Length: 154
Image 1 (cartoon, helix red, strand yellow):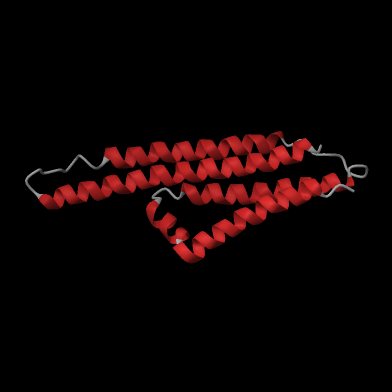
Image 2 (tube, rainbow, N blue to C red; image 1 turned 90 degrees about the horizontal axis):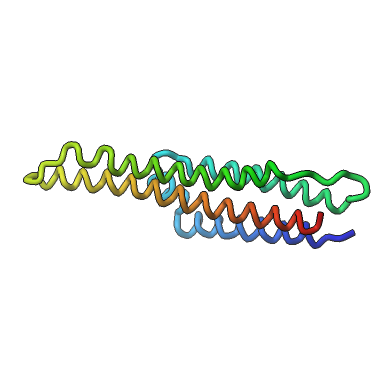
């Protein structure tokens, strides 16, 4: 039996979980992400990535018993990987709409409080745009690494 594909998948998953755990524990990234992403699309991306990673892991473990089980066609996995990137781009567009749509409506240039409010609304939209894009790209890339690993041993 060839354990290499399963070990490579396990390495990617452990590195991902380890990095996320360190970021969450030491830097409070989950709170930062919750506060910065007004749409919460980032959490949807994380949930979809986690479920799909487990599915790819199950398929990769099936490669150990290639004679007993039929190998899976993971075209759905490739679609999900592209969808994660698309969700990140949707978050970008929504973030820019939040940033530009409401920020300039009530600005009084003589009132510093209205300028501060407009800048804070713009910052919220920009953070939504950037965080969703970043998570969409990272999760898509990590999922594609898992899929390439599976297909290289299929």
